[in-house]
Image (cartoon, rainbow, N blue to C red):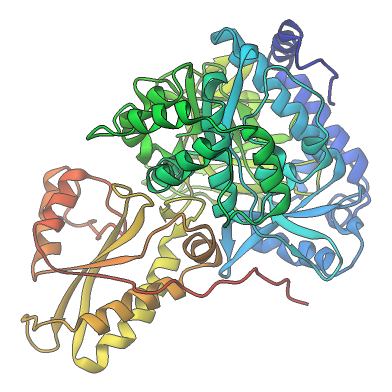
Length: 606
């Protein structure tokens, strides 16, 4: 299923994409046939299919599942049982998802072949960009790439984030030369486990090679903005290193240090002075174009929760296009943006039909969640009359303008798995539909790779209330929002408090309120706590206490915007600027967590 092509041959790459999208229906059928033929005798599929690998039998008998349904199978493999529980191919590693289960990351199976599929996918991004931007082989990319913590499971398999898996693989480290993808960052700096040293060294190398940089970026918009903040904080030290041709003593990783010294090669006071001069203005507006004047675009993911960073990126960019090239997940890589220079708010992805077998659960225009129907192994969605039933549809059968939840059947042992992404069909490229990422199912807060849902937020707030109740305080209402005005962004909770038996609110004890903030953070999941403690990609959580009647005013506003009085319930996450102004205008106290929450790499239960 993986055609061979030279990534330096743009014409061949574009022709391959035409073939894939023209033959989407046939390729999807072939993908499903190959997956079922290979894995028919696994323990999982055998329990449903009884040796019949037909598509109809698959759709009728294999259920649509969530992570909790398949978690026991994956944990058995993590604990040393054979891969044949779910996959005929050996599971070579486990990929940790940013989605969570029981406070811990989800773990997804992966195989050696899947690394080849990812490499194939990355190579196809090149001809698409070259179609729209000339001369990308005449310079380098300053892409800031990082690895994250990993663990060894009882079986000996490594469990790690999908990008860490790829960067540490031979597919990346021993990759063939591609003149369109030459990085300013030596591999040693990308593979440095100390994120601070890695960031410093990658920025240093990017500044030294500024005249060769044609594009800049990171995986997520949040990570790129943290890099700008880091650059601002360490500018003098970076310029000092450039001026002297040396590396700061605190850069202690030997491979990283040697790679950077090789890039520096000699003192360059002229370059150091130029960088300091460019950064000496009152504002850093347009700083990217000033520091890297040949840059043609910024490549970061700005879809989904990352869209909240678009305006800040535009401030720093100097008018450079913001490009989101790809759509992927821990389950599998999914789609490519065929119009990479489109407005970041209008980005759509075309799913490549040979990456997995795709199905879609219809979701109504209010993005109402669909629920698996045990009796028909499809899904049921209740309409206004409480009667409507719908089933999952194939990739080529989705309808323009409709909303769907993505389901994947992968080559690695996931069958009819609900990814949790809500997508909208925006068009078609040949016979392949194009989708706009709308949001994650149930997620209310996200700053970086964290994904906090309404249930987790409620549990965390409930834990914090325990500190207040002995003092006679009642938490009558709460809501939240992701504040990305600062770098890094942070969670903000609005609380309306009162004393038991009265609406009066006496003076709040800052120590108790700071403890409440910390309890909320300790109660959130492992990914959030890792982002706070290890990655430092999320700032301290903040509680803003509002005066009595604030949430009544919020309700009045929502009703004025069309909400029904009878059906209104307080939104647990606020995105409307007008609603935020209502809340902020009534704040009587602000408190932040004064310590980072506990975090350590998760463990597989045995």
